[in-house]
Amino acid sequence: MNSFWTNTNYLNNNSTKTKTNKDVNMLNTNSYSNNTYSNNNNNNNNNTYSNNVRICDNLINDQINMFLYGSYAYLVMSTYFSQNEISMMGLSKLFKELSENKRTLSHELIEYQQKHNKKIKFTKIDTINTNSWSAHSAFKNTIDFEMSINTSLQKLYNSSNKLNNHNLSNFLQTSMINSQLDLIRQLNILSTQLKLCGQGSGLYFFDQNLLKKYNKQV
Image 1 (cartoon, rainbow, N blue to C red):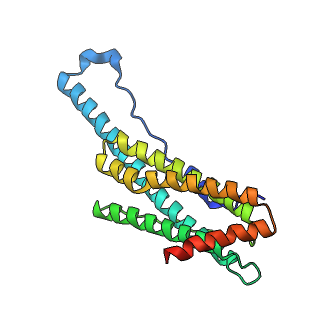
Image 2 (image 1 turned 30 degrees about the vertical axis):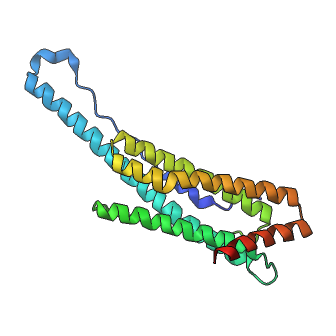
Image 3 (image 1 turned 180 degrees about the vertical axis):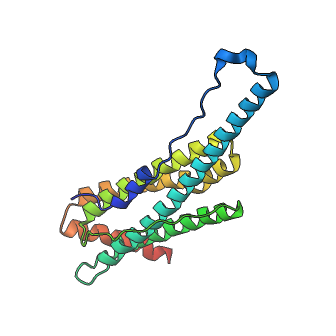
């Protein structure tokens, strides 16, 4: 089954290439005064910094929209597994928790940007065409998506470091990146357990164990 996370491709479509200014022509250096050369260097540095800020802001907007799409998709999955004819309530609660987690993360980034007087750009969320999932395909798609989130967070983290924006870097590391790595590890453990359970009664007991876990948290 193909991945239903088709909308995540917008990260690649919206990626911004760094533009560089033309180098100063060094053939006629005698015609430039020291002040003029210094001003050109300053202008180049300012333009490079402004461009890096713009790239970082675009990456934050992409990350916000990626979280919102994940929240929507996980809610769709949670609803599917809670249907009467499916009745896999453990999986349903797992995906509901993931949906709420992604929504919370999007709000945290939105609040961070608004504190710094930045504009938020929301993108269209496409309808998910997949109408049904097996437990195995749902986990595979989920792990693939969470891995793509980790990649985009690392890209954003590197961009903030390039700007020496230690506040943003620390925020990403402590509030998102560390927990994202833990989530991927937990999902991989669950996926392995699911494979060992197989189908039929094994799948039933796997789902019941998940349900007990979430019921204990209430």
